[in-house]
Length: 336
Image (tube, rainbow, N blue to C red):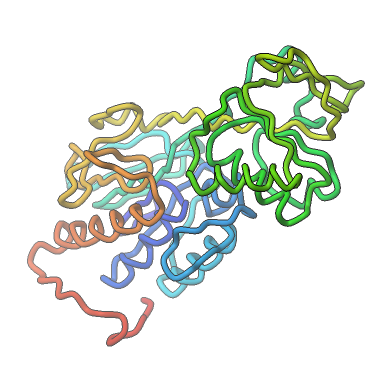
């Protein structure tokens, strides 16, 4: 039995920053994650993707952000159970929670914080014949390392931020030999700035932009060598390529956590914005896994939610102690 003050389910950026905030209040944390390494999506899906909305960093790679958060948390000596999904939770007579993983590892604490991000997810796949036959043979749904595409021809499909950002990155950094962005509409769902950058780069010939069209076929003998693009007006065309990357987002699911008795709304856990507590006293939900009026799914917001949840958790663990806010600029950082 692993015992701690706070069990954090999810070792993404929000969970990692919560270690720091808890550590300032002398609360120990143990994190559980189904992935084999800390970082969540930032490590597993897009470690080389730039992030632009972290305060103090005009731009930072997702993987670098995780490295920094790990360094920030290190003085407080957090524990980790990695590569094991949290499966069940039970309440003891002593007002403690026991969380058991898929491998039977048990964790005990008076406080649980669910920081599972989008939860369990899988890519949204376009309905293209033989698509799955070319997976890992030129078809990828996630860009983990852009260097994998160095000197290659890439066709990206999608109209959201991921498709726009990666098209810009691969072309602007001159990583890919050719970048073709295909979108079924003439309007995009991504940030207006990114849309304008793609349009400007297309005007300069840095990106080949094909709108009002869809990739409808994949061609090759054991490996992708071209795709068939069907245009709404011009009909079919063949585009030679080394990689086809459909970026239509992820289908999230809460997984086993959905059966723990939380109030769920649109695949997210409803919380009280006073302290981001759930309908189960002693359990909080922070980051993308929660929902409330005017919720924004931003890492920055998750940092705030984790901070407020920790303050509430301290009061629950130590009802007789008064927590006086101390600024780190004055008191510095000390581990256990």
